[in-house]
Image (cartoon, rainbow, N blue to C red):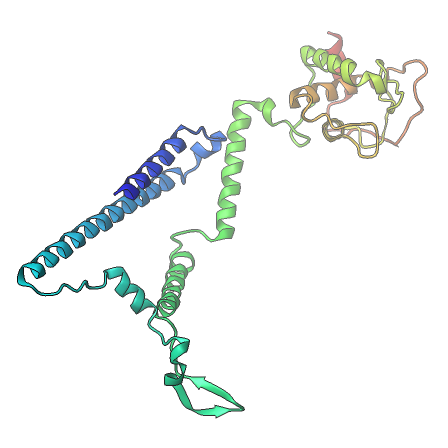
Length: 304
C-alpha cells in the first residue's frame, strides 16, 4: 500500500510540475499535434492508474483467499500447503527450459567431431517476444505504408517545414522588423531610420571606417569599389556575419536586425561624398542593377 501511495504521489507531482512549467516557445502551443499528445498522455495516465489499482485489488483478494484457506485448514486439522503465486507460476512458465545441470537428459543421440547437439528449446518469453515483433512489424507496415494513418519520417519533416514557414509568415506579418535578414532587407529612405543608422555607424563603425566613411583600418565606404558586393543585401550580410580573418566582426547579437538595416542603408548615403584623405579603392567596381534604388534617392531623403 505504501509503495502504491508513493507511486501516486510521484505521478501527480510530475504532472503538476509539467503543468507549471512555461513552454520554451510559442510554437509549442501552435502545434497541431499538441491536442493529440495531451489526449494520448491523459489516456496513458488513466490506463496506468487502472492497472495499478487492479493489481493492488488482486493482491488484496489473493491475501484474503489465502487467509481464509489457512483458517479452514486449521479448523479441519489439515496441514496447509501454500500454493505458488500467479507471478511465480508465470516466471516458471516463461523460463520453462532445461537448465545446464540436466544437459545429459536432453543430449541427442549423435555427435560430430566431439560436438554434442542438445534438444533444448528457447525460453517462452523469447519466443513470445519474437512473435510480438512480427505482429508489430505488420501493424507498422499497415499504419505507415498502406493506410497513411501516421506520416513517414520524410513526410513528417515536410510537415514541420510547412509549419515553420507558416509561423515565419505570421511572425513577419505581426512584426516585420523581427525577421529582417540578407534576403528580406530593404533599402530604407526614411529620414528617422537613416538618422538611427548614422548614430549606429558613429558608435560602432567609425573607429575603423572613420566618421566620414573614408576608411582607416577598414575599407573606404564612399567609393564604388567593394570587396564583398555593394548592394544593400551584400552590405547587410557583411554587417550581420562579419568577414573572417579580418577586423570586421559579426554584429549579429549586438545590434538588432532593424538597426543593421538602417546602418546598411546609411552606408549607401556616403557614396560619392569624397572625403579628404580617403583610403584608396579596394575590391571590384560595383554598379547597381536598374531595378535597385540608387543611393542618390537615399541621399535626398537623408538630407530632408
